[in-house]
Image (cartoon, rainbow, N blue to C red):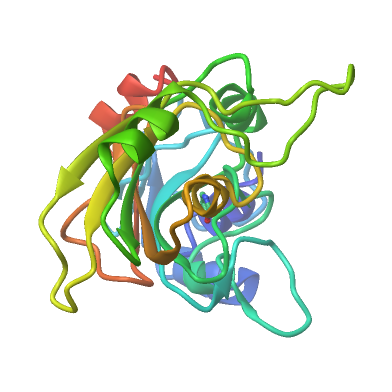
Length: 243
Ligand code: URA
């Protein structure tokens, strides 16, 4: 790979700026200052530094985003802000969200260009756990909880015409929110369209606020505010099986 392309992947600057930085001797390859942008580097084995910091090449990119409300989980949209718009400072080429959250849902969203990981996390066969914090209109009865936990008819049908009940789930009742709405954690293992809202509707309730707290081993970082993101840590990558 050309050195200027490599540096471009780290969002150090435009091609023109990078050329200038190289001329100023700010980059070294295996300890030698390199000033020419068209020098070829071995991105996996060479030790490339910029301003003294080693740049670790990685084939794929992984970001945890705290998706805020009013932002769509899409890569492009004519009208609304997209989750990719929030990663303005990054090289977003090839990044996609691993699954979708509704425009009015907030919380954990993984953005990556690792298509195999997205496939693994979203495959219905893998039953990856997703934990949602759900604020609801009224308290759940024991019967509602048991219905949600056993599997509920949300209006989906199988090819043979039989009801496609949701998979068993878990409900944990939490304290009320500051508006007095009951709060639950709902742990589901699939990702059907509007699943949480439709599950609560199926037991005669209504979601008034929805936030995803975790997906598989990934837990929303409490230090992130809505709209903020960060790269995944080495531990998180390892937990996802990509390191
Ligand atoms: N279930 C929903 O209803 N909406 C979401 O955004 C995610 C899960």
